[in-house]
Image (cartoon, rainbow, N blue to C red; front, side):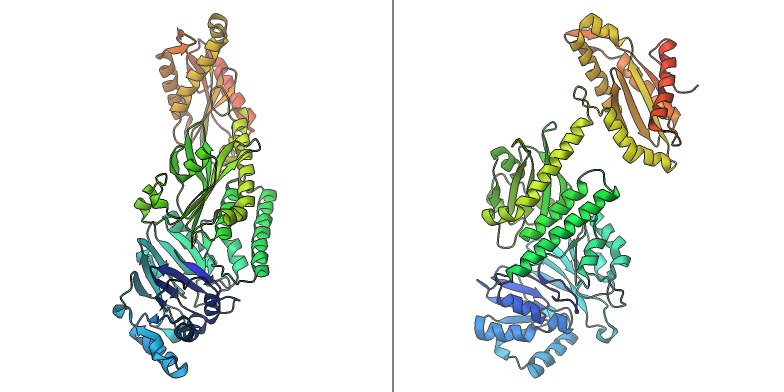
Amino acid sequence: MLQFFGRGSAFADSHNCAFFRCRDELVLLDCPMDAFQKLKHADLTSGVSRIRVLLTHTHGDHAGGIPMLIHYAFFILHIPVTVQAPSPAVREDLRLILDHLEGCDPRGYTLQDPECADPTFTAVPIPTQHVPALEGRCFGYYLSVDGQECVYTGDSCTLEPFLPYLHAGVTLYTETCWHRSAVHMHIGAFLPVLTALTEQGVQVYLMHLDDEEKIASAICGTKLCLAPLYTTRRDNMTDRNDSVLSEILTLTDKLYKQMCSGEGNDHSRLFADLTELGKVLTGADRASFWKWDKQKKELWTLSAIGTERIVIPETTGLVGKALREKRIIVTNDPYSDPDFNPAVDKKTGYVTKSVMVLPVADVNGAFIGAYQMINKPGGFDEAEDTRRLSLAALICGIALESDTFLEESQHDKLTHLKNRMGFYADYLRRYGKMLAEGKQVSMFLCDIDHFKRVNDTYGHNAGDDALVFVSGILADSCRQGDCAYRWGGEEFIMLMPDTPIEQAAKIADSIRVRIMNSVCHADGNDIQLTISFGCWEMDGSIQAEANVKRADNRLYVAKETGRNKVIWND
């Protein structure tokens, strides 16, 4: 909801100042001098009948630009200014500054207490703690504008006063410092708290930053974001280009180091970082990168900045429209677009004002996903924003194609179960780590009895149908965390974490009975199948192949002693 002229602390190059538009009012949260300078060159005052300043406290890096704003608005813009004090004590401090020290023309501004204000939005001051000298004179705000809720802490050394206002769907803008201080919130101490809030559905933006680069590094891999900066028309283009280039170089350096460290084994961080970059490049409030799962006929977010993961049918929403029509979709009035799905907004209270969707294709030109931005101040410009997003969207498309190729290489094309390559990949990144941590992981290796007879009697098409039939029952029998694999031929494996061998044997036997009592329809024939199992509780001290060999030994016993049985001990 908020955009920022600056997000720096008192000693940074750009001081913290946020703003938003509400109907014909421009509302600032604090107004340092450098924010006033940027406001002069921003295209924000067109159609504005009043400028309102919500003050948090009277430090110069928060209130220093208010007198100049009043002078400029009165003499140049001819727009009245309302300065809203969070308490009577702060109002009197402001009266001294504005009337006696700065000599502001009383015709140019109104000084109000919160209870005297009659804005078209809700702004509730929240007392907080900052420096001892301003005890009782430091505040944050709870804001509600057009159904969107947010909490703005101002300068504070604690989150406690703001916690009652935080719940799923609320956006928190909180000050954060890198250098330790008794009067600010240190990122090291507050990172667990802020991360926990994001898991509860609170979108968290960091502001009042004393070392932006180090704080950005500290939140890498989390859902925390830096407060979104607004770019004025007259911003120096060299500085802007340097900023974007710096962001890109920081991102690529971070991704390169992650790749070399072996921290990740998929592209999830790449998608998250590039989606965040797209958000920065366009100034959008939210961003997401979508995968088109053609097998399941679904669209789902590989990365979503500002919201939870979303799964929708492939024919719905503006993402579905972009992929269906194979073109970029831009709407700055989504509620009037019949393809826009307002369900998420209705659930969360979020108000979508503008949407841009770029479909993403593979090297053959087949569309496989989409890059989506939501709520850019002033709306999206298709030509300019496409130019800004094209490189990030291209890299996301290449990464998605790589992920899709890797996923397909780890799945059996006939049964759609993971194959032997998928088994080893899962063992390396998941089950092997569980065993190293001392957790129980059991497995079984199973084999369709007399499968050669099926092929010889009914043909290989019938044999394929039998494999699909058995694999379907195995997949259907997997609990959360379990995974079934086609090991090769008519052999299958299932891995079961947190499962003792006795329980694994019961699961195997239930599958055995289900297959035995079912009829397999195979190439026009009704076939009765049975299956044999060898169960084993995996041993973390030996290799994956050795564990499979132990299960195979027990499967051999099952085959040699009559088949259609489960062997789980020696």
